[in-house]
Amino acid sequence: LNKAASELTSKELKQLITVVANPRQFKVSDWFLNSKKDYNVGWFSQVATDTLDAKLRDDLERLKKIRVD
Image 1: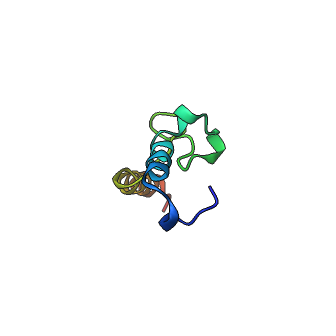
Image 2: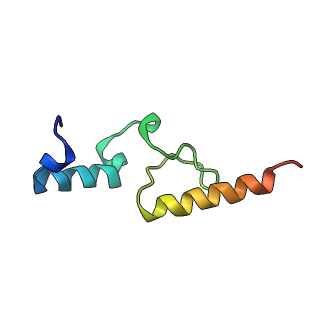
Image 3: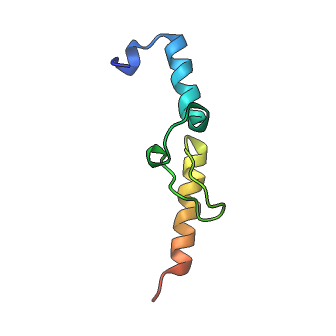
């Protein structure tokens, strides 16, 4: 799409939300996803909204635990 977000129709917006929420169903490459090789489960994923906050918090806690003093 070559439109600003405010110019999207409701149908285009729903399609965009669907792709962002389920990128694997649309064969989006691993390198394009925002969560690279999850530490706990070992796969790539796309993280959005509330899950993003929880994922960031978990990652920061894990990094604090492995930090060497």
